[in-house]
Image 1 (cartoon, rainbow, N blue to C red):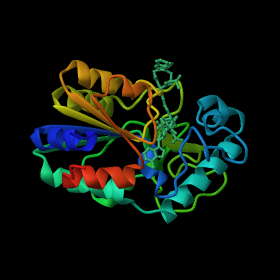
Image 2 (spheres, protein in one colour):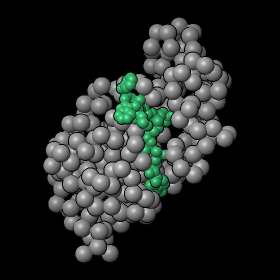
Image 3 (cartoon, protein in one colour):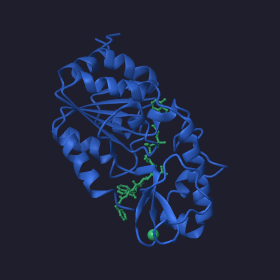
Image 4 (cartoon, rainbow, N blue to C red):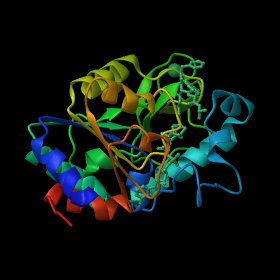
Length: 243
Ligand code: BJW
Ligand code: ZN
């Protein structure tokens, strides 16, 4: 029996599937991943820009990076991997989508109640009064200001060293603990605490299927690894193909 057949059989039996996605699920929409080829922005490692320290040192540079990404995402659309997960929701009794992505492509594809572990690119948060404002779809100036108090705003995403939104985190933990299958798609599984959800789900008794271009640290806990493009593998998996 092929790995795809075994994975399809697990999916067909599952009562609650928790899907955990990373940048690889949006790669085929033309959104660059963080690590690996194509991850550089103007020769810089994006990880050096996704920190509170980088924003404090040069908010203009960090906003340039985020404004570029906001524009890229606005032009992009969901790909067959996002759409397959929407289809999967109609085929299993319960589906939870947990994403590390900030691009909102799962929601644009039609997934509901998506748990955004690292925030999203559309909202901004004031550095002074903390007001959160949805500025999705709107081009922002080089140094955007708060409508309420006039102070500088920042992207409402989670940078290194910052805590994940507590309510979202608790909901994600609860989802992987009650799932009988955790489907891990397109993440390098190196960023914590998000990556820890895979082992948490496994310890709670879920089977783990990984879909990625290559093995990752999640491959150890995974029962089945399906290696290739998510936009090709997920539609076949969801359709229950057996070869
Ligand atoms: C395809 C494909 C295709 C490509 N098909 N697949 C425990 C151990 C060690 C360190 C820590 C730890 N706990 C906490 C830490 C520190 C830190 C951390 O994890 N560091 C490690 C990197 C070493 N974590 C944090 O700081 C977190 N906060 C925290 O822990 O708070 C508590 C605390 C408070 C105070 C002090 C200390 C702790 C916060 C982490 C926030 C991460 N933020 C970012 C930026 C978000 C905003 C933005 O987008 O700009 O989130 S970093 C970046 O990485 C982004 C992503 O969501 C995240 C994960 O990346 P992802 O999605 O996995 O992408 P890639 O590029 O890495 O991988 C893509 C994958 O796709 C690859 O595997 C490809 O093969 C694959 N692929 N095409 C299928 N077509
Ligand atoms: Zn403000």
